[in-house]
Length: 102
Length: 385
Ligand code: HEM
Ligand code: HEM
Ligand code: FES
Image (cartoon, rainbow over all chains, first blue to last red; front, top):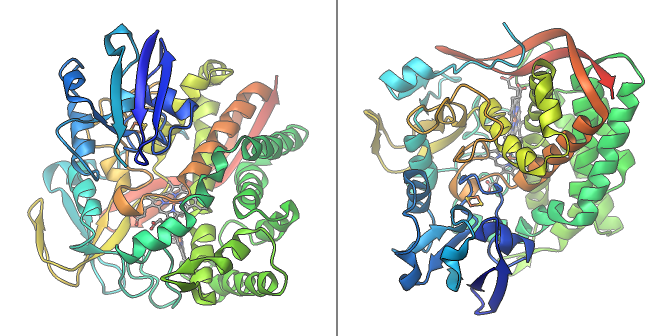
């Protein structure tokens, strides 16, 4: 089980656990505000934009070019921005904290 | 040639030139064909405006047949942002479990009805009724209202002798005027009443504004959804193995609905009016001229999509722009996606195979490019499981 913490725009902290799927799917299932996941995770909507805690950002696989290009045009982009439908849940992300971007 | 084959109409021009002029009623448009140009231009609402004279950003231009500004479609930020915020939550209702349930009931009833019939004309007997009945859920009004919309036929704006027919368009305008008056006289919990009660910049929305939103809901959500459904039927007819694969497979249905909308791109393009001169792939876009964002071409751009001309049901990375991009991205997309999800679920549960008996293609004429967008007629037979 990986523990994942989402912090919404309103500052609400939501801790969830899962061992499969993506960070987007888990958030949508639990209705985390600001993560809509409109496109179901195929990288076409950017409604799953988060800022990953810096210490965790480096541990993740780097974003693909498609994801980076998508982020280029979104609001509130930082160097820690990711589309969380592209972050799979595994032991590697246990303990991660992400801030919902929009 | 197979019915479910939709060629990449813009390929050569996209790859060699990147843009293409199209002369539309003496107000020429330069079509932008490359994925990156389309996204970048859609994002830049400051230089490329939607808030021109009503009808001007639509291609072919509708400036001669209407005055009503469509909202939020023909408004730029920051006003756009405020209008959109008023309706955003309403247009997310399709995600509610109750909405999905009612939608499932509608689609089941329509498919059961045509399964009894033998050969049917799919657009008028299946796609149009499903689209119309589903729209009553989005507006939150009585299901029976759909009968009126179905009776208008597939082309509310088009007549035998004219692509842009003001008399025919007035049927829709008059209908919406009358419905707004009814909602003023007897408020209910429909979209009409919700909009009439909404506040924009601290005052109530005007009747003209409410009309602008509603017109768009009818116009933008009609042909697009009908083509999305009809074209998908041809694919399933010609790929019977896909019916089995999709049956009871929510993960595959999820990616398939995105792939169908990419491949079919029911809305070919949408225009913008240039506010600040810019260069795009060698084209100098001069102030007060028009460009269009060609979603259909962008969605086949081989520098972005592998095997762009194939339908790959489980395509994992699919950054398509079929629902637009940026501030104006489709407001009805949640509804359209939910409808397609339900449609695939119900159809693959009840139907074992589909035969195409006759197909008459609908080819759009964009000057140098002819693009198949759907069908004028599609006669099919559905075989029950
Ligand atoms: C498969 C079906 C559909 C497709 C492919 C589609 C496509 C699009 C596209 C490409 C845009 C962007 C236009 C632009 O950038 O200027 C758009 C906007 C819009 N669509 Fe859709 N659409 C579909 C269904 C619907 C439905 C069902 C509705 C409502 C009932 C709807 C309502 C709207 C509205 C209101 C806008 C304007 C949003 C804005 O300007 O903020 N669409 N659509
Ligand atoms: C009051 C508003 C609108 C009017 C009067 C209108 C009018 C028309 C007309 C006359 C056609 C036929 C054009 C031709 O055959 O060359 C057409 C087709 C189409 N319109 Fe609109 N339109 C409106 C708004 C929209 C919007 C907002 C969208 C999408 C966001 C849209 C999507 C389409 C599509 C996809 C077609 C092609 C359908 C086909 O040929 O099968 N329309 N519209
Ligand atoms: S869910 Fe659409 S881009 Fe992540």
